[in-house]
Image 1: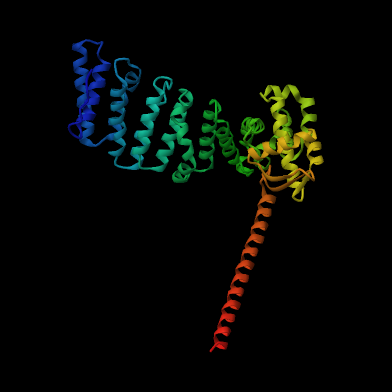
Image 2: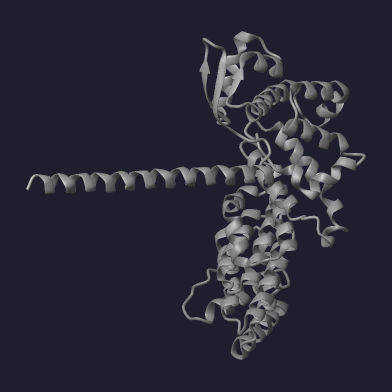
Length: 415
């Protein structure tokens, strides 16, 4: 197997052309192969001398399919060859030419993504880092997600998802491009098992939030129905999610009058605005629907009891009697403390239990919905807090002035 050695700036590119040409014509016999290899090398030399880097990229990529599929090319050599091709973007005379080269490289790498997907993604990320333009970076990253999804190589891209908000800010891409990006990430996470459920819900939310109800979305918002329903089911199913703003999203609100998803929307309203008794009534009439979405009735009851406890906390004046809890959660008196501990361990409630008087004294609770009313309430509380701090500072300053004055008078009297 030939080895490409980087001895000068131009030789690696010409070596790649020779290597791929010899591989492509290996079965044709020397009489046919040698003239073709010589012709391709001469053509490559002309492109290099003239600085025609896009033409050079096209020539080098002509046999890329053969390289990617050939068992005769070790992955290490293949990665080296593709790295040399990717490096052409740094030689381009303009960002536009560099983008065209990147597009040509991506067009090859997204074909047959099931073959060596991890290597393809690694090369795409290398290309991403070489590109000067933010638009080009966004384009290449999206192609990496495409390969990961089609090639079942989610592990290669999921770690980068934690930086997507930063990427979006750096790239400066518009709403439509963001929507496409978030949906691609969500679909990759959908197929992952384990701890990815919360991340899947997060990206579904990001995707749905790009539909702001404007006239620009009127013709396309219907495309989001399936993802809106999926977000609802994921929220209901999750044992870690107790707050969301799905009800405020136009993409979700459209389900209220949708024949297929109307019941799913009703389920969301129950979990965010009602209590256990409403869920039990819904389940009695829609047990088949819940089973079809993979929802376990016992798990739903558990979550709905905690949601009902949050609802009680939001409507009490800081104290909840045991009797209200047993009624809302459908439990016995001796089970109250179990559910209080469960809520505390889930980090959705801070409270103290008055066993003697059978009261739960709530100091903090999670709001199931955090919309405009909750923001106004928070603003009001912050205003009161600032006022209290200002009063405390004024009192301290006044006391200090009085104390200094008293010490001054004492000094005068002792003279």
